[in-house]
Image 1 (tube, rainbow, N blue to C red):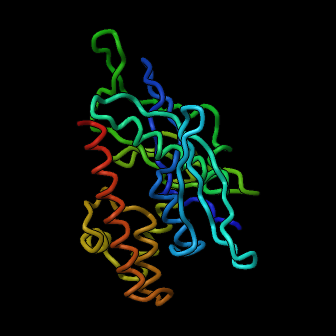
Image 2 (image 1 turned 30 degrees about the vertical axis):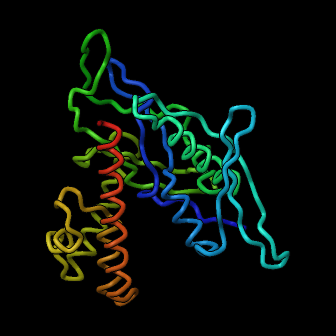
Length: 249
């Protein structure tokens, strides 16, 4: 069983530490991404999960149906509790973590282990009550571009929510953007129209959205396929927004 490598928009960026000069971050996947890849690769009728407590540790198993053996094959791992929030969500976080770790056992997102050990983003910070915080509380970070070689991360570009490149090859990233924008212009597609179609602000329009619009215009994909992609992106944004609200509440 082989799962494809994660796309840029399937990888989350999480702050690990805030310092006087910026932040160090980690790359991670969400449980939703594991579920999507399982559905995509084996079909939603051919995988299932199970949970067991062993020596006070919560384990999750992901079973994938082997048609030749006519039985499920299982791989297990345990999770760690998330931070206490007073509402009992620690176990929910532990269950989600165990599920993602079991996904790693199957190879889902295993390439994230090859990410640079130190990813530092130079951003403005400030001190409050003796601790460092982001100066802009609304600043977020995303993976703009990622490429692989032999299942290992070869190139990684991270930007903030305003599109500023904070990590990676800035020259290559800018060249890539110019090429895509040139293709849009050649095809007679306006970026603002693409943004309206995807229901996002112009500065939130990703290169992948532009590329999908170009593919549909050149008949590489159908209008129905483009609509499906748009709907999935919208669902993903709503999920991330809800997840952020749950974390902040």
